[in-house]
Length: 561
Image 1 (spheres, rainbow, N blue to C red):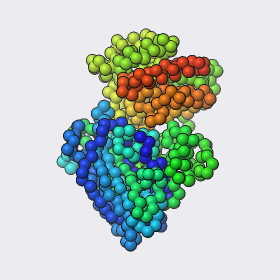
Image 2 (cartoon, helix red, strand yellow):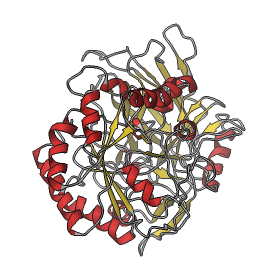
Image 3 (cartoon, rainbow, N blue to C red):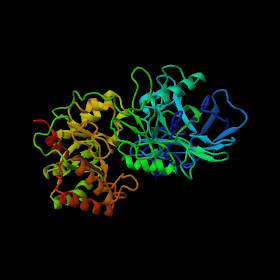
Image 4 (cartoon, rainbow, N blue to C red):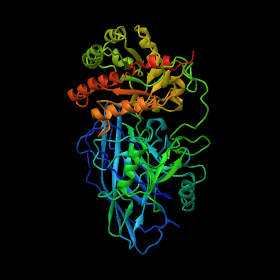
């Protein structure tokens, strides 16, 4: 579903969608709102408006229930001779029942009715101070009685690489793009001039650009039509769930088209996206010193700010020395045993009965072991879909490692400190009470932040996110270890045997640690073909004499004496 335009602007470029994940089929309402906005220029360049979306109910909605969409001017217009027309062309919602998440979305059609081409027509969102929730810029959150909604009810913002395969094209995160600090500051000053932003208010330094569906270009020529989509993520079933969301949005144009490399994405793949959309720049987020290929300028973004204030939230943790919570794992230390990498670990999520029915026989046949991440309450639920405590103990007796996957598989970033302790430490105690040895943690949905990691590292050696590629050695973290999906939840085009072999080759070439992520209980995605690919991937690894080890064994090999 990688159909969303892939480029981004150089100076004043930003669209806000607000979060994505795996969902059900969309519902689309018939209500539409249109608003004619004046042409904008890079100089004074912003037209302002407010978008309000309402959540029509809680729980699974009927086909007749739809979110309402309202678009209103939020400031004086500029350049009244010709216009850009912004029209809400569709809206709907997706429910992820297993994750208790709802996604409200609205797609805008943008028509250039000016006499000139508009380069990088984009949207940027701002929020009043203290109203940004993990980067989700919401100017108003109200419950059933109009009372302010609790901040922690809204999940974290979209991360690059997430996408909704069941949303209508072209909705996914491949339009993700970042701004240089000076570019974001220029936008903030323009917003302040228009009275939309005060010093200290929350901002987003990334977003998505308006693009032409046919080509992915960010240049909208006279008479051309572009599209852009805003998505909000909120709880599906919660008596306190907010019912209304208002966003302060700005429309702007700017210079050079830019593509931002997703977290964990190879530079060459991001460069191909840039070339396909006609972009001139490739932005690289994070500390690496990679370079864009020829004919693309390299833009370095050390971090992305999600909100303002004295302690702003960033997309990446601040780069600082690794101190504390390492529990004898020293990422910088030379490996005294000389057997660090390459290593391969298979890690199965959720502790389903399929671990015993599908994976255990295969791994025993191949003479290999793996790690199973278990949510303690699922294990004790009596639901036949999940493995029982005795079955999990059987895996442990077979040489498998058991990892903590929380109590109820909640999105940990949305919980209070008390709830976090119950989900993380409470799960560990419940697993250990069943005779299971637990030293490592796997974040449900891959969702984590500094607050979550602080609790995880109290009693766990390492913790795993859901994606991100091969882990380089020496490691630069042991609480955000990345994985590569195999079988289920694999990105489009990456669920092939060749893709799995390529990941193994990368681990061998880099001397790194490759952790495959499996969901064998998902029979629709981890089907017979993927099961066969798994067997062939194990053979491929063994043929290259790469050790297949549990996460605990990998940590032992990487630890200081």
